[in-house]
Amino acid sequence: MRFGIRISGAVAIILASSLAAFLAANAADKKDKTKPAALQTVDSGSFGVFITGQRVATETFKIEQQSGASMIKSQLKETAGPDSASQKSELDMSLNGELLRYEWSQASGGSLSVFPSNDFLMERMTTSGTGKPAEQPFLMPSTTAILDNNFFVHREVLAWRYLGAACRPEGGSLKCQQGAAQFGALVPQDHTSISVRMELVGKEKITVRGAQRELLRLNLTGESFDWALWVDDRDHFKLIQVAIPADNTEVVRD
Image (cartoon, rainbow, N blue to C red; front, side):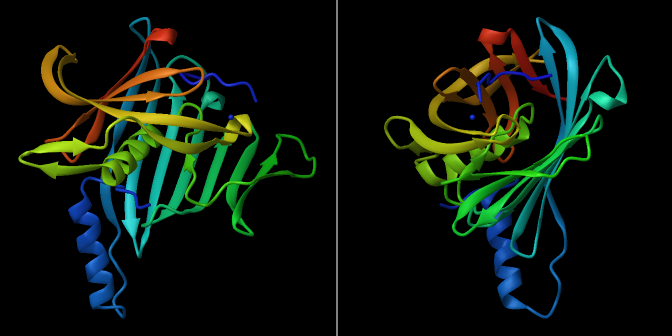
């Protein structure tokens, strides 16, 4: 099952609840190298995936930081279907946004990994059979964003990356660069790379689970998709809702 981005074939990062949390953890690491850093959970929860108003899947995720690295773990389960429909992913990154390793697997069999190799990226794929793993190189830097199919927490990470690189607080509000910021991204399950753009639209009042909320809207676009993302600037810019009109799909934080 896939939601949203439909593709044939595909700097510093704010990973977690707040930039302050990362700076504090980094400072603690530098202050006492002899003491192992505590594992810090920066965001966790679940997203409900709804198509034409009906819940079809749930993504459960956790973002943690320890010893200069961030780990983004996620599991997607279909609402109606066997356990074999579930998928898992783990994205490990350094604090400056470089990919350390990405792992994906599904319960029905098959897995893949993406890792740096000679200053570029390598994807290794294993099918559910006993065949030899296949490899595919990508001439892309280790700072390339991972935006795999079905994992909406990856979009939250990209939103933080955009806000950290292109925006700054000014006069009590957020000021961002004019025009959209462009990012190169890898979609591992599609074995392809894409170019995406993100831009801050501004504050909007929307209804989330029956209650009206004022959130920051970001537009995420590519060659064949157009998404709207809403984040809460009063709660560490956590992703609250995603709208994918072309697919009649809505993603809402539980």
